[in-house]
Image (cartoon, rainbow, N blue to C red; front, side, top):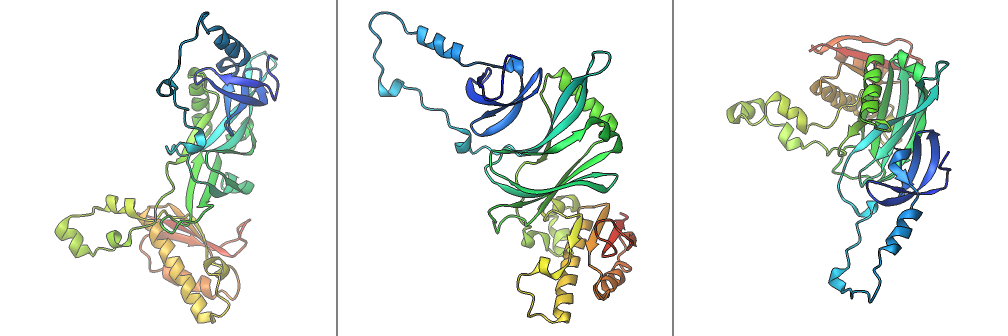
Length: 341
């Protein structure tokens, strides 16, 4: 192998220098440039020494020309000073192997979060097969960095895997939403198509954008216009209102310690009132965003909160059905709601 981990390299199309972090296979490397790791093909990099040597040879013989301050090219801004927001991505890096016929096939995928924004995020990640949790991870991804999640075997994609994320800001911002959910769901046919596209375009990985910019909080004044005003002024159509809403969440936990840090002085009635208010908020957002399913975690306890929620659900015309049955993650402490629109 021409390269080894730790070797200095140069990216040919950008002339940026970096180091080799890992040899993925005989055609692909994982490199690090200015603190950012990403995969490249071996023909996209080279050793920097030849370039440095030839640059020295470019000096002409004789008296060198004078250089003035205005002639010196300005230093290119580094990644940490760039302000362009390019989103948060989920990357699948394939590891190839040879089968018994000598053909190159994908053995597994390495999964990475790639943050191309200037904001850091906390995340809660779940990888599921047919709705059942297979792998779970909590962590933080800093701005302009990547984060290795785990490997997943190529054969496991026959089980229609889902990759679910819940994001929040490392540094809270009162103008931004508290949580944001994003997901990627792949079926075998889609995966095969993406692999073929990746090979045709000579790309080192498959990438899926989770979001561009972390969303702002809902502008309540815009959303809460009365129906009469909306009709008179024709300001908002139904599909336009949704753009101003806070993002919905498919799972909401109503345990009081999740809702308030100062709850111990509250009596039972005040706790129940706060929990029901929170339920109504997330229920309305789920309906407004046309979620197909919504899970509410109410716990077991005395069953008072569960019964109150079930009574409310019976009056909701959008509810097709709801189920409170044993769940491998929540036991009997959650109700799954299915909508009809």
